[in-house]
Length: 189
Image (cartoon, rainbow, N blue to C red):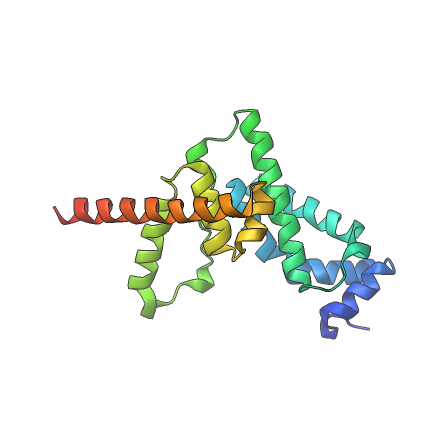
């Protein structure tokens, strides 16, 4: 039977039975998106690959805890983000990662649309400016604006309170706004 025609829930059931071909199909469906997510946080292709692989292993060994309350992709992405942040923190303790290099946007070649070139330029300017923010601001905004997490989820990931998360994101947005305005003013002169 070809696993390519099965839906994710059917594949997950086969994975729980230990079918490696089903695990391989799940991996094929999700690995690129999970790699891109890890790469945005750890910024090193080899380390992102390691984090992604480790995350799939975690997911397959903890599959029994997946209750289907969220989509599998969202559950897996949460594992990838948590592993990426954990890896980042470990690297930060070892002083192997420059703080300015922690986050950046990965552009897929398929995402580039000539009709939206101006929008892409503006998005790139925002993403470049985000690199200039303090670490906690950059991480919070990336999780909120790019990854789509809500305040409660970000608070859990970053190990801060809900109120602190809202304040951090609000201040991060304001800091980003000011930096963008300053950059626009400097460009006009």
